[in-house]
Each structure stands twice: as structure tokens, then as C-alpha cells.
Amino acid sequence: MVTSKKSFRRDESGSVAIITALALVVVLGVAALVVDVGHLMVVKNELQNAADACAMAGAQRLVPYVSAAPPTPDWSSAQTAASSSISLNKSDSATLSNCLVQVGYWNLLSKQLLSTSISPTFFDSPAVTVRISRSADNNAGPVTMFFAKFLGKDLVDVSAQSTAMISCPSTAPAESLFPVAMNYDFVSKYFDQYTSTGSPKSFYIGSDYHYDDKEAGQWTSFLQTANDTNTIRDLIYNGNPDAIKIDQNIYCMSDLYIQPGTKASLYDDAATKIGKTVFVPVVNTGFDTHAWNPVTCYLPIYIENVSKAKKYIKAHFVKNAVYTNSSTGGICFGAYSPPRIVR
Image (cartoon, rainbow, N blue to C red; front, side):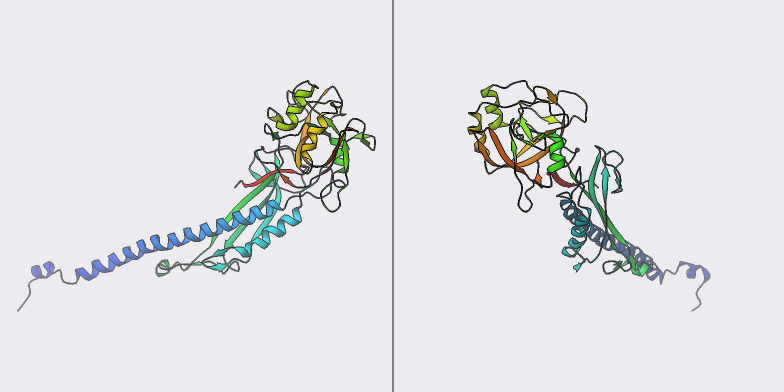
């Protein structure tokens, strides 16, 4: 039987195979998009979690600060802590083995990590940046594709980066300070000698006790002019009634009023703080009594003893204490806001 040209053009046999082949390409493409992209997202999330964890571990080791005036972050310990934490994380069930760690000052305005050699401003906080990659020679290599390899894409590089900073408090929340102000000159000179590391040396706070001709500290009524028993007693038990901010060398309502002393009976109230760490403000002037003094930073001290007879508080500096609910900025002398991820 002879088939006409017209019937040949109408013959659709074999078209199903062509459509199936084309559809298979589309199905494989969708599978690559769904499965492989989903897998990449999982890996990316694993690397991001690892980078966050390593950056936080490094930031926590920026303190306690090493000797200087003012003290400087412990960059070396931070780098070591961040790098060693990588082995605690996995990607695709395989333990991660390496990461790139950078330390420096995170600028709160430019959102960039600056060198450790800069002179930090109020807006620069010590930070740790960690970058983790799945690429050639890094952490078992690139991520293997399941379906995309049929389309010519076998391996994909994936990376994640995180920056965590530690900050010094610029604002003291209400009810967080003990009513004693420390002298910045004394703190900067003796901080390393009178800390809780090793066998700490003690200092005395009181109008008649001095070290190297510098008064260690005196009572303060914070933002009010007062020296009556009831007011100071309330401040001992309840702390500053209002938040106090660092003055940044500008006279303002956050300046503290310094008192030369208090009634002897109030030392009985101060004795309730024996064996406790309290936070106190540090003022940065000639430490004038009966005058307003600007706040430069905040400091943790451990109260060892209180003498009512001689009217003094015996204490030593604490080198590393977390000051919660405080804002970022300022000079670090033992008081730190908890580390946090900034990028």
C-alpha cells in the first residue's frame, strides 16, 4: 500500500518520545532547582551558624583586656578562641576544619571592621570577624550537586561570614550603680595591680584614704545634690534612680555630684554589700568634692570589707564582669556588655 504525502504529514508516531525527552530536561532542571538549591541553602545555614558561633567565641575572649592605659582588647586570645571553635561545627555531617579570622574595631557608623592599630573613638568597638568556606582546599571542598551535574554543574563554592563585637557600657541603667565614684587617674594607674586576677591588692574608698596622692573614690549622690542620711541610704540599697550616660568630656546633666563622706551609720548599710561585686561610675576630672564631675566609664569592684569606725570601704577591681542592659560605647575597665552579632 502506498502512503500519500498528505497522510505522511499527518502521521504523529514518535512525537511522544520527543515530548518526553523535552519534558525530562525540564523535570531535571526543576529537580536541580528544588533539590540542589535546597541543599545549598542547608549548607549555607550550617556555615552561617558556625561562623556566628566562632565569632561569638572569639568576641568573648577579647576580655579581660591586656595591660595598657586604657587597657586594650586581647586580640591574640580572641583569634585563638575563634579558630579553635571551628572544629565544634559540621557541614554535611563532616566536621569543619578551618576558617579565616580577623580582629579589629567595628565602627558603629560605617559598619566596617577597622584595624587594631587605630586609636578607637566612642563609635569603635572591638570585634571578631569569621569567614568559613566550602571551596577548594577548605572544609572538604565545594558542595557536590545531585541533579545539576547532569546539566554540567558538579560543584559549587559556598561561604558565610559573621562579625561579633564586645562593647563597653556608655549608659548605666537605673538601679545598677553603687553610690561611689572612682577617680579615673587612680583607676587607669592601678587597675592591673588591684584586680581579681591572682592575689588582688586592695584599695580603700573614703575621704581620709589615699594612694600615691590620688584619692581612690568617694561617695556620690549621682545626679542630685544631697548628703543627707536618708538619700544616701536609699542609693546604697536601690542604686541610681535614673539612667546615667557617659559625658564624653561635655558638661551636662549626667555629671555626678561628689561627696566628701557620709554619716558613720551608713557604713552599716554599705556592709550589706560585703562579698558582692557592684558597679560604680568613674569620673574624669580633678576629682573635685562638692562639685559636678563628668562620667567617663563604669567599673566593677568587689567589696571585701567595710569599717564603720574608720569610715572606709575596702575593695579590689574585677577584671571581667558583664554589665547587662547597658548601651554600646565608652572605655573598658572590667565592665562589658554581652557580645552580640553585628553582621
